[in-house]
Length: 161
Length: 161
Image 1 (cartoon, rainbow over the protein chains, first blue to last red):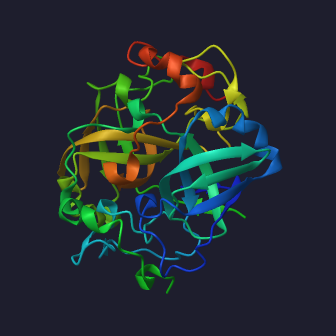
Image 2 (cartoon, rainbow over the protein chains, first blue to last red):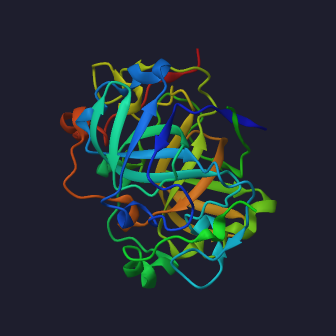
């Protein structure tokens, strides 16, 4: 079974390489970017401006293979790739929560991003804490590494090989 | 540009039709389900059991077209599809946060689900509030409708046509 998607637009950021990117939006709060939605889908943005935050689902266009065990940026040990947010996944789909600053026509101005320039965008979901948040969660191996997320930057370990 | 993905597994639930499903996991807290990951990807589950909640990214396999404006289950007005979580999107990708109860081999036991039986799974991301949550958010048209999410059920309005 093959599932086919097409970009609904592209994400433009100042991150040109996999080196020195923020790790997750929480590490890139000041980074701003733009999304250009293809004109044919622009009508689907109606009322999105009522939401302060959105999930972006996008294609890791620079990842061309996958590993089942990876050492993520925030740790020194191998973990199953599904227990990480690393890009070298069987399906190269990324998920990031970003702030939606404003919408002008088919352009979205966003901040708090950790996304490579020219990334193909697959979908936008409004962030709704009642749907997307739970209290009292366990966060496995991340627990002892969370303080690093704001100061660590990415390196080229997930560069296409 | 066409992006191709393949299922990493399938989600099995008691929801056999689009009628009478919970709307979002928050409305289906007691509903349980199972995920069977294809054996070739099972190694990627390592250490996922340290996380209490996971995001599932999946393919709305019963949606075969899209609308740019939809009336979502929780409202009586049209909104741009990207301002909703409705399945009739240009790319039929669903996103749900569910509780991960346990993992046995290549099987994940989950609860709090709003997903149709036999849904193809595309990816799993560990839920990490530092990445996936923001305080003080605006939630647009949902704001006045949030109380409905726990009592409303779906109907067939997004059934494949």
